[in-house]
Amino acid sequence: DAKTTQPTSMDCAEGRAANLPCNHSTISGNEYVYWYRQIHSQGPQYIIHGLKNNETNEMASLIITEDRKSSTLILPHATLRDTAVYYCIVRKVGGTSYGKLTFGQGTILTVHP
Amino acid sequence: SQTIHQWPATLVQPVGSPLSLECTVEGTSNPNLYWYRQAAGRGLQLLFYSVGIGQISSEVPQNLSASRPQDRQFILSSKKLLLSDSGFYLCAWSVNEYQPQHFGDGTRLSIL
Image (cartoon, rainbow over all chains, first blue to last red):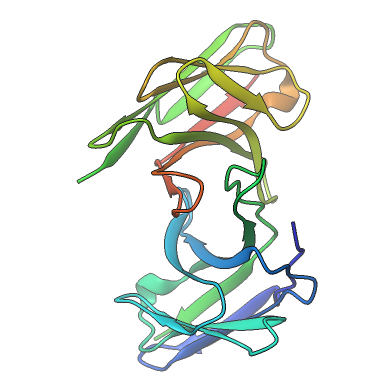
């Protein structure tokens, strides 16, 4: 599976947009970009995923560059409850991978009042 | 809607004792099931996954085993726990390999 690179930590003011970058320069054609977050002492929560088109749901937006080598997760109006570790994951589907997720260290997002 | 349950939430066990962690999913049938472990200060590591009853695949060699006795039940076991087995154990499910995985609240295991 392709490896991802994320900043170790980021800060954001409450009410502002949080833009979390992720590099995945070795991504393959059959690999999706997934985002999860983990609030302290809880299981990871699925946020959003995409292949090559930009995606939006009730939680966030995902912007994937045209060459698919990087992406940005956008939380449009961050709240204190969005403070968490955010994981960018490249997930292979098909073949013998069975859709397994490989988690890296993620980005610690801290939202300040 | 689908829900996933893990228990217990926390567990303290002595070295050398057996282990059994249980995970069940409701509201779906024939899900893919996964066991992950998160050691302190580290990312999640996939331990086992299952695509059907009795079908278990292991990702890393270790002191643990998994079983799927029923369609929506996934069990993580050990005959003799080691200190290195301490960690946060998470169960996850997905409809199939193409859909997102959804995680339970985890079991925090401490080995003394």
